[in-house]
Length: 474
Ligand SMILES: Nc1ncnc2c1ncn2[C@@H]1O[C@H](COP(=O)(O)OP(=O)(O)OP(=O)(O)O)[C@@H](O)[C@H]1O
Ligand SMILES: [Mg+2]
Image 1: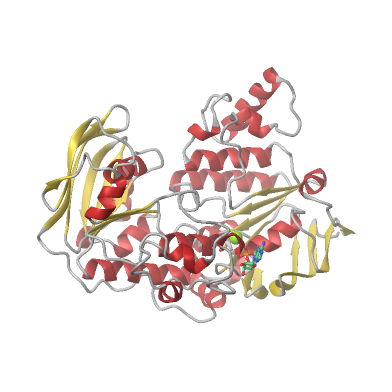
Image 2: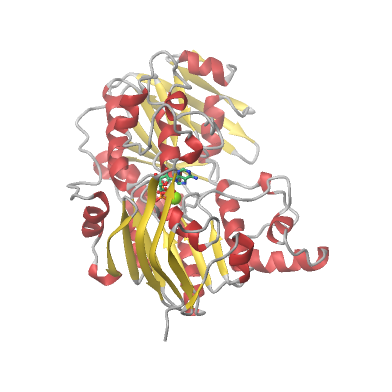
């Protein structure tokens, strides 16, 4: 019996640079095929070829043993291929139902009913008429997934689907993926979360520099072996050793922050050189708190102090001048000049002090040319690195980082953790928001936990316990 999906020596170049070279894979019906690799390794390129976004330069694709060359994305949908993109492709000013049935509107009543069923299958209880712009990043991602599911595809491709989801939602997504496979679909799953890939997938493909660096049954791999293959060398530890120490001096303080249905009496202090992790589930109010701390959203009650000075009335720009930095959760939306060059983007926030080449090296940026390559042409993870890197050019007094390593490969993560440690050693107080408790445990001096807008627990470096932290968050 032929494989449901095959590629034979598939190749694709952009402007003379090979993004994918001679990649061959065979995905069986009912199987989950994991694809991993560093940022820029060619994962999205491969998935885009399969979904008809662009044609290959060489090689073939086959479905059920017959040649498959979609004329475009719509054609690939007709052939039973669905792609859940790394970048969200929803229209914010349309409702969930309108987004789901954009191409084949079944009438308002039917659209609403079908939408409600689809959302329920994802445990997402939102009215079908909700505007997408009113959804959180995680909810949007689930809607994007609902969109792929309703097409009843036989080949379902997930290109980093969990990047906006927290642990629980990611777990839910994994259940959905398993169900799809049980139903007989071939699932392709791209992720930087290697432990989840190892748990889910039965077959693996490791891409490096656009080529297959290894692969085979997932049972033959450990996380260490996978990392060594995809980075090209073994990595001793996922987290750098924390050599510095926080100091006693308070730098930044939140006092009794409350806002109806968002925050409830949130108080905490960050000290000079301290790295504090903020844990919590999607919707617990972590990102909302960050926006309030930075002055983007207002807060009904409470005070914010920077070095003893009340700053809650200052605009974000004034807070930056006072020594604050804030790296948002939706970095791409919040501040890259897509048509502009990489170097120009890296110098956006601190034009005088930024040294683009240095930052690019530090975050292991992969690009053809720092000055001439537009950011729009970089892979998803490399865009994230630029968005993060532009903030790393100065040493602020306080830095808030919301999901700093989202979408970033394992090797570059280590460098980003080193930069975070370095900033702390230089005196910066850092608040790191992350959905990965392991990451917070790996790099933070202290972890505070949020639940339903209130602080629900605090843990210190020597008393970390993953289960107790989770327990507080739930
Ligand atoms: N439209 C494009 N124009 C020019 N170069 C591109 C284009 N799309 C991708 N590339 C290049 O192709 C290479 C592979 O990119 P791809 O998006 O496939 O990487 P990826 O493995 O998905 O990485 P990530 O983990 O960062 O998402 C990169 O060097 C990227 O810059
Ligand atoms: Mg990608």
